[in-house]
Image (cartoon, rainbow over all chains, first blue to last red; front, side, top):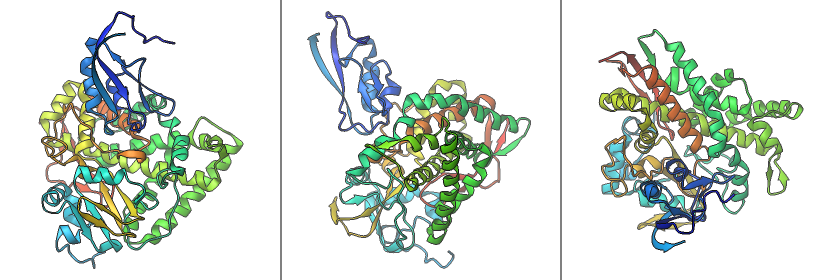
Length: 82
Length: 396
């Protein structure tokens, strides 16, 4: 589908990652930041696309991390062109 | 029941059936957290009680030493009852759980929301024109009982029978384990009849889902299906009823929060998380199957552990202002639905029911208080919520 792939010139300062070995499917990230996370067929959370966070969604990214009971959501600061 | 010795000391002789614990467990847990973070009692053949977030978390993450095969603290050690996946440990747990996950994903739960909303509206309509009601009996308990029946493809009128079984299993059987055995037998008979009906005429319901489900490659045996159905009934009704009831109790007691939520219903999902944190209804047991040491405490094989997720949620080391209910708390990684591999499979469903229940109630009755002079009664046992919640409608 690739609907969430961003144009090659987009610069993200944040990137999200769900550690699937820690995720237990509480789905907090999916609810708090549906633009950034989706649930798989078993309800497990995963980042959409490559996990890059558009600047207007950075708040939601931090919110998703701060509300994961399993500490499975990671936000890393990047400064790269993808 | 009345012959039980009074609690001498919470750290070394606790009893979760004690009336002080039933009324206000929070101050007991706070005291323990400071004095003796892992309490113990010789009652119920030996039980440990961790009160700190970190210790509860560590035990929930350690199924090798702390097995889920026995989840309830009762007198004696009645025969084990399988209700996969909640009573399972690794390695079989994984595939069993995977089998049960699809009907509870966010997408699946979304499809149930219209029915949940209709149920709430029907219940509220019955309260139209009345000046008082019992929030626990007339509203909170009816919502999950009816929605669960709907999901199982069973007449929603069966809710009454469900509630009787649940009360017997969770409250009465703590001191009389024979009751649990009888309830399980009755439930199994009931579900066997439903399974037979669904084999003849399948529908879009959980009984039909389980008949067709596979663990790995194999179909489920009838005993497994009845065990899972029993689990869904027990786990889905009492708990959600308690959570909705506690939220209503809080709002009836806190006019500022009630007005705020009524005026800004978009805050309800955030408030639901805070109610779950502060009034987490569920305490789960674990059986110690291999001796272990956690935070300087030695856990003896054969004894039980009670994991009160509400105690974890009130730990100030994990949550700032832990004893204050802050309905717009933005950072809230509470443990109300458990932690680790046994995370409540119905958590998304329960959250939806709570949200819809509060949206509909506040939309219809934005003003209400606890009825002056009336008594609120809390449940006894390992699911905590109001069982009697007298409410008066109208501005105050």
